[in-house]
Image (spheres, rainbow over the protein chains, first blue to last red):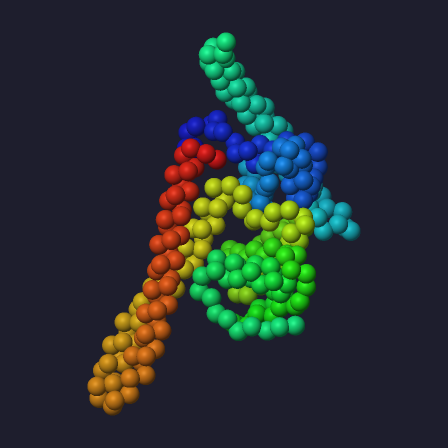
Length: 109
Length: 181
């Protein structure tokens, strides 16, 4: 996706990670959430997840929560910017879905 | 405890071998120069994955990464230079570090960038040793460098083949990516 195009499609993984982070979660929690919500269809690789988290942190879509002293696990949560990104993506997906149903639907008896 | 001496050039073959051993109940637990240590366990208990790190294992970025992978239920088995070995119990489901084209392509590019200079160094050493070996050999009858050059040619050949296969795979994935995520 080029930089000039502001509304590129999110990857499935990024979309579901952003949904997961509407509640604070650590890495393993995100993987479990994505697996469950997709009925085991989407299984995020830990390396892929790590890369996605780093990129989204630097873009400000998510942020790391202050760690409690006794916990090694870092938790993340979505930011306002992240919520906007998800809402835009849902609009885009709705357009795809509506158009698909309308056109394919026309062939149905 | 079982120790095996073995050298790999291709990390994918190494990973496959570790998984074949685990399949037979020999679980890899540590590595030091060409020597693998295994402990006996339940056959098929673990899935092994190895990966090339961006930085050396002692670097904070690498530590953070390894820590993250461990939090997802995998076990950090060992590190050697920039290579890291992980394993996860098979009962916990499939274990792959990368699950989409973008991150897989990025990873293969990293490995290719690691192999390319090694290939060049071996090619140069092969030519140099052959030249030296022949000129010394012609004078003194000792062809030591020429023999070393054979090893260099062999390694350079294997590395070149690996590079080509990585480049092919990256191209194929980039094509797929135009259609699928």
